[in-house]
Image 1 (tube, rainbow, N blue to C red):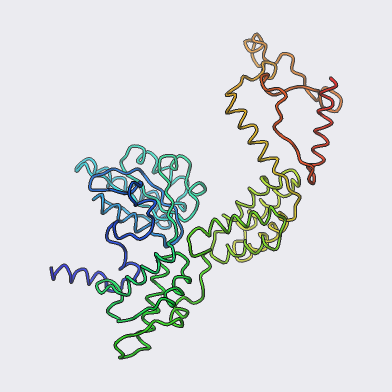
Image 2 (cartoon, rainbow, N blue to C red):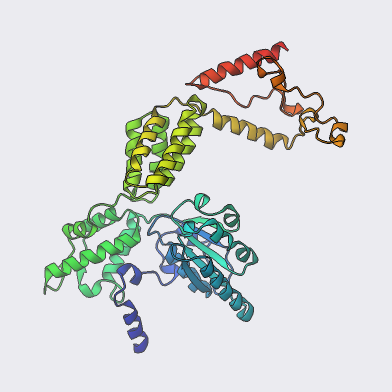
Length: 444
């Protein structure tokens, strides 16, 4: 037992507090009850049990890497860990070869953990597909970005996406107190204390990020110990935490859902034509370390969803901002982003692209795959023409004004209204054109 204790102690020398305090079992894991609580997807696991391939999506410090390690230990499966920042296709092939050998020789399962999987190229991700599909490996990917954007669709369809939430104030505070009291792995040998007020300050500085909390706490405890000298007990003060944190981290909020709250109010500010608020919330995200591409993607979507044909130039501005940031990066990229945000906020608004697609989708779902009218099918071959394909089609450019009244919808739904232009901005002109066309149809 002494030998094992000495080995454990040696392993901990030089390790950061966050690494030393990693949970040793799923029961020790704090938070994520929606995943590991009773009856949830990762509950009641045991040796040999199979789990689906999983994409762990969550903010920094929410426990993605820890959870992957715990799954390997709980299932008693071999865990191969790769970082997408450093690994390539060769590393993936080597991992698959090891997994294949373990499967064939020992009938053992292998978990392949890929951290920051969104950083893998399409080629690298595609290399995983046949092995995930065949069950040679069980993939556990970790990402801070929306998997819909960072993981290829084919791989995404073969994995279960699970969301990890940033830890709550109470959960972070509990981890801090546990670290203070833990003599084997934590800070108890330093004989430091942490009162509730300073603990709250520590938690607020870390915004749901357990890894950052441990880092700040470890530095603050060291500062407190050095300041106390030979005094038996050392009090961690607000000044120690402030020095260790070096300023408050703008990680959205302390409850873990602020990422979505901020992006939501950002979009609503643009929709509400408030450029001041829109720029403020955009800045909050960027200063907190949000990937500018995430913000820009929302702006491109907004340009079609909320502005649309009321100002067709809005989409051009949004896409140009995206391209500009890809070209120049940050910090200069904040300038085209600000330019685009203020333009979008002040542009005339229309959601007709959204409503038109919704109306068309409803018809498709309700009516199914209605046949294409024969006159609009290509009459390329004698067989096609014999079936009436292309007969009766009127080529608009053969008529005055390059228009001839026709109905192009399937015969069963002719007359259904799908696109209804608004009276906002340029779309008012489109509405007038639409009205003129409809009048010609009625007069035919």
